[in-house]
Amino acid sequence: MNLKLLGAALVVLATLVSNPLWAEEASAGDRTATGGAQTLEDIMARQEQLKVDESFRSENLGDPANAAPSTDQLGTNGGLSNSDVYRAIRYNEADVRTQARTPAATVLIQDGGMPWYKLREGPLITYGGLALLGIIALLAVFYLIRGRIKIDGGPAGTTIERFKAIERFGHWLLAGSFIALGITGLITLMGRSFLIPVLGPEAYATLAAGSKWLHNNIAWAFMLGLVMTFSMWVVHNIPNKLDWQWIKAGGGIFTKSHPPAKKFNAGQKIIFWTVMLLGFSVSLSGLSLLFPFEMPMFAKTFGIINSVLGTDLPAVLAPHEEMQYANIWHSIVAFVMMVAIIAHIYIGSVGMEGAFDAMGKGHVDLEWARQHHDLWVAEVEAKQGKGGSS
Amino acid sequence: MKVMVAGFVAALVIAYAAPMALNQFGWSSAEEYSSETSVRLDQSSH
Image 1 (spheres, chains in turn yellow, brown):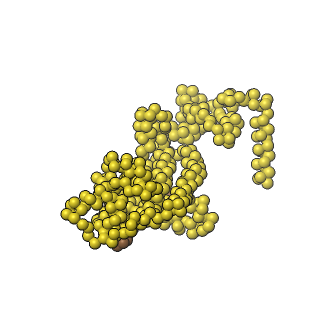
Image 2 (cartoon, chains in turn red, cyan):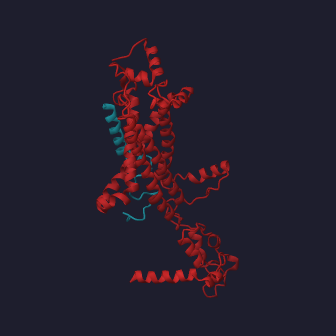
Image 3 (cartoon, rainbow over the protein chains, first blue to last red):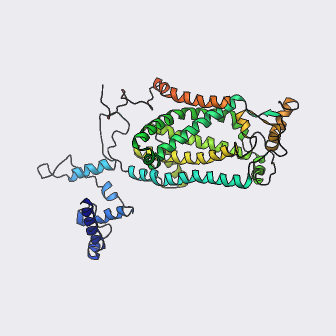
C-alpha cells in the first residue's frame, strides 16, 4: 500500500517537473511563489544530487526589527518566528544555551552526518578495500615473476648483529599494535557491510565492542613504538646521495645487482618516513577521535592550507564536522599505511631470503648483510677490528 | 623470536593498563559512566 502511494507521489512529482508551464512559472532561484521558502525545484535538485545554494534559508534567520506585534496571530517569539529559530539551530547560528556540560552540547542539529556516512560506507570502503586487495595481488604477481630474492652464492654461515634487543622490541611493539589496529579498524569500518551478513548482528555486536576497546587502548602502544623507533633510527634514515643511486638501480630487485647501502637503504628509508609521518598524522587524528570534541584540528589546518595555497577549504567547522573529518582522514591515512606495511611485511619475510632474521633473531647472515648493506658491514667491521660474530 | 613475543605482549599490557592510567589524569577516553565533568545522557544517574 505504501509502495503504491509512493509510486503515485513520484508520478505526480514527475508530471510537475516535466510540465513546461509549471517549469516556466517557477524558474531557478525564483521563490516568490513560496514566500522565499524552498521550492519543489530545490527538493528535486537535491534528489538529483545537485548542489543547492542554501543561503536563502541559512541566512533567513529573522529580524527582530520586523517582528510582528505580540497581539498578532503567530507573533511574536522574541522577534523571531519558529521557522527562523529552527533555521538558526539547523545552521548552527542560534545562541543555544544548555546545562549539559559536554562539549558540543549546544549544537542541536548538524547535517554533515549523511555525506560523511555515505563517504565512509561508499568510496572509503570501496577504494580502501581495493587498495589492500590490489597490493596483495601485485605482490603475488611480483613473487611469481621474481621469486624469492636469494642470497647470491648462498649464506656465509657466520652472522653479524643487525639490531639490538631494544630496537627489535620497539619494532615489534609498533608492528604488533599496528596489526591489531589495522584488523580492528577494518572490522569497525567494514563490519556493517561484510561481517553482519555473515555473523549476524548479535555476534558482530560483541566483536565490534571488543574491537573498539582494543583499538582505542592499544593505540597507546602504537604511539610508544612510534616514538621508540623514531628515536633509535632517525639518525640512520637521513636521506643522502647513496639513496639516489639505490633508487636509480631499482634496489637491484630486477637487475640482481646490489647497490651500496649503509644500515638502511633507500627503500627502507621510504618505509621509515612513511611510517613516521603517516603514523604521526594517524595518531593525531586518532587522539582527536579518542577525546571527542577536545582536539579540533581541521578548521585550523584548512585555514593554513587556504592561506598558503589559496584554496577555499572550510575554515569554520562545527564540532561534529571536525570529528567527521578526523574519522575520514584517520581511515585514509590508515589505508595508505596498511598498503605500505603489507609490502614491507612481504619483503621482510617471504620476499627475501635471510631478511626476517634481522628482526626475528637480531643477527643476519654475513653474506646477506654484505650484499644488501655493504657499507654498514664495513663500518661495523672497522669498529670491531675485523670479522663478525658467529 | 622472544623479543617479538615480548613486543606483542607489551602492546597488550599497555592496552589493558591504558584506561586505568588515563583515569589517573582524569582523562576519560574509556570512561563509560557519568562523572563530574562528563555527563552521559543515555544512562540513568545513581
